Length: 440
Ligand SMILES: C[S@@+](CC[C@H](N)C(=O)[O-])C[C@H]1O[C@@H](n2cnc3c(N)ncnc32)[C@H](O)[C@@H]1O
Image (cartoon, rainbow, N blue to C red; front, top):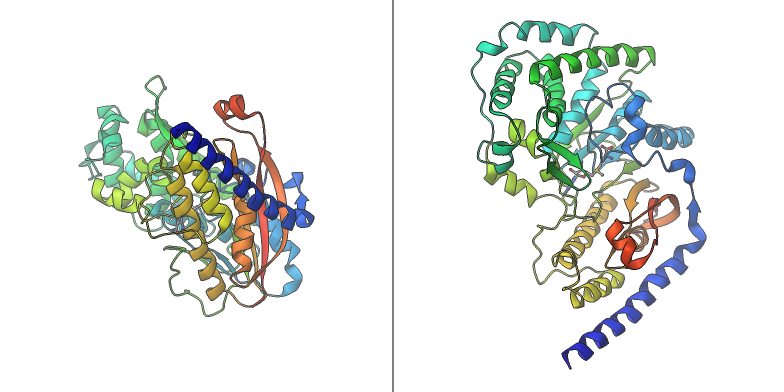
């Protein structure tokens, strides 16, 4: 009896939900545009050959050339005031400033905000400045006291060899004593060595512990990074990269935008929110956070619960309901199959994600000038064989908040986890750039 009612619930749910998702596919079919030329540009990989952007591996970033292509396509619109509500390591701000367009952005993760502002600052730093700072620290570092870190966070107890952790804390002491901007640049380089100096690896969705890994001692790792940074300063100059317009990243929440730091309203948004794929930024970047941005586990936990709800530990109030019917129907289907889900909290995550993204879209509508174009890179996902067309659902929500969907570029199709492929066959999911215009 129980089996039958479960079957009924699923069956009804599937039929109903497919109808909504199919309706969306039909509604947007004519404006879905295949853009395989963007496949590399929606990912960080294309930045690996670019100075400054490659100094810190923020692997959720998109490519510099994605931003420059969009800016150049709108060069005839006069001054573009650019905004990125999920600015990450600041790719949008960096490219805009180099092309002479003022830009600002916000991010909830202090590591991202710090990296974004520091690479912008590096556009104005004289070659030789970093090696000078390094040479001042090298002779004294071994005699410096150990700076404080968030020691009570579990990963900090197991990620490092004791002598490595000790030396890292001494480097932190030395770096904090430097004047600005050497302090910020050396901090950025320091953040970039935490992964190679530890037994961790930023792998897929998680920060994995890999005891078999060959680790590098901090002194050697820093020395290598200093040379890389000096090489990048020289290369950025030979490319003619300069800070041609002001750009700034602020710590903030895209669901409740802070007062803009500039009087002009944005008229171009280039952004990418977290994907609803269980990825937890506060875990992937926990070493960086523990060294420089949080004092203890409690603060780390608070941060974890203050980011957009795209990961599995999110809290959702029972009164919260996503407004889009395709979302609630999918969560109903998944709740009915809770037993099969590899994490029973997935429906809550999806609910929280769309409630949050609707709030972000509402805020964008409030902030942006009429005719603003929004370019947003998003990823579809699949749970238990059920596709979630995040791109189309967000377009539909945006249309209810004063935007019109101009086009949807399909940059690439992503495979699925091998587990899912075995069970459901290879049904690829889109990674898209949705393009909206603010019309009212
Ligand atoms: C896909 S990444 C953006 C990467 C960025 N395009 C770049 O090139 O570096 C999404 C970003 O959203 C940030 N984020 C998460 N929750 C947020 C929130 N509530 N408000 C603003 N940013 C948030 C994450 O910290 C992350 O940096």
